[in-house]
Image 1 (cartoon, helix red, strand yellow):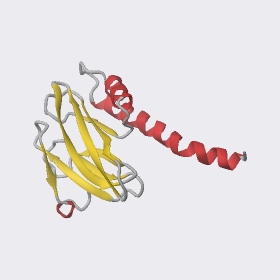
Image 2: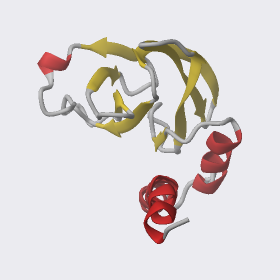
Image 3: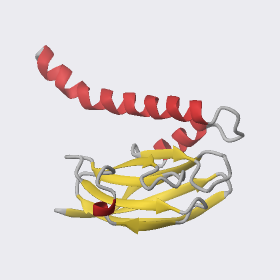
Image 4: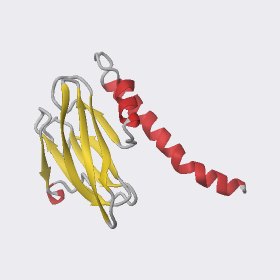
Length: 153
């Protein structure tokens, strides 16, 4: 086995570990004085089989909440994904998203300027935009059209 093939095989897992670490570090800075440790939310997402998750205050209680993506049914060329939540105040029903096979990336950001953490989903394989969920500040989400927020995807 050559050095090049070994380094190629380790590249993607290494990037995934760096992404988890970066999410943990960013969330730790944002929620320094909260009662629910960020590390517990990260462990929860990974234990449930998700490497794609977002940590933010989705429900407006100034505590970190977890949103994570899991494959509900795998198909080709499309799959059904479940976006599950672990809010500081308890669980919330999942949202289902149809998207391309290969996985979804989840990113939390305020796409509409209302100071609430919205969720942007892109394709894991090619980073193409899939869907935006706008947050009302209480953890309730509605689907938004990508054309309304061209910088989000």
